[in-house]
Image (tube, rainbow, N blue to C red; front, side, top):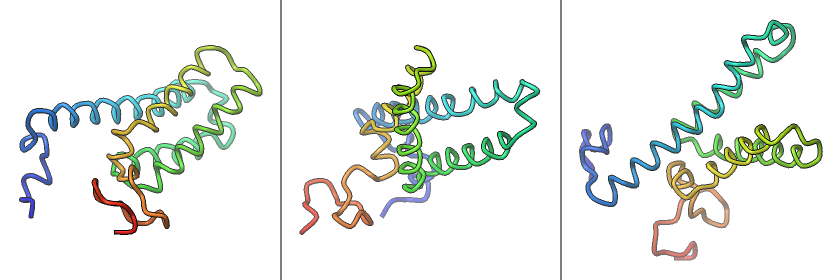
Length: 140
């Protein structure tokens, strides 16, 4: 059983490759948060932002991103569906290279093994409810 200190501060326990993996995961999560937060902060500086439902939508998006940071699996699924829809819409109605590239980057980061492992989505059972330990198959 892991000690309370190991759960609160995994970087103190991890060594070698595990520490490198932890740093990559932290960097990817931080980049994802920035990719979701900064455009909305920039949009909030426009006066038209405050006239519609944009403030409420922003709070919902930030709530889902916060849930992802807290390792909720449903938040990962929701963001993947949301981001895939945005990438598809970029193909249909091209907004420009920067917006398309950042949306594709965000989807790519969500699909990295580090984020899937972070939210425990990497090896799901057939029902999609419980993660399967590495080295085992869902039928074991």
